View (spheres, rainbow, N blue to C red):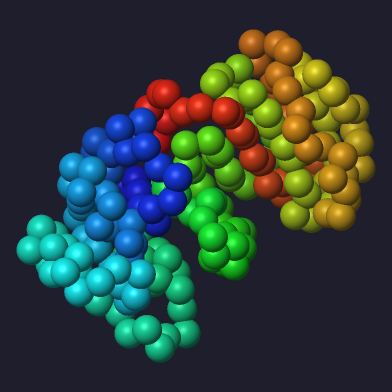
Length: 206
């Protein structure tokens, strides 16, 4: 089962594919999704970012799990507990927003669970722990950040690397680009955070 958790920032809902996925709206993201015509399986949160009228709208249009504002978890952390047997979990809209601490919290959640990815209109973020290939797509820039020190080889990129020792404090591998139709990323040990970025989103990528 694939899960999509809608957080609600920087999302063009028409650009994402929700078909055959279990869709969870989180706090204000639930309201924004419903207003955009996205069918939710459930909405969850303490809903401190919306007023009572919007909360009543949610309760009339979908199942709602209302959490206490005083809790030892984030709304997104609580939503992840609903993702039983997930093959893939997409946090939709968890990257942008005025509250940067929530983005950091989402990064930590992603680091704990390798099935989690983050997507919005401009970026796709995920963690890899083994070698993989990347096809040239609408994403122009590709960055790699070591979560643990790793030996990194990049083939088919504008800035290739051959068995480079990438430390978790090294920003060298930011904003690379594919020059081949397909690039190969080879890892020896460790894990990397991969960030793919584009200027505009005009295709269904979820």
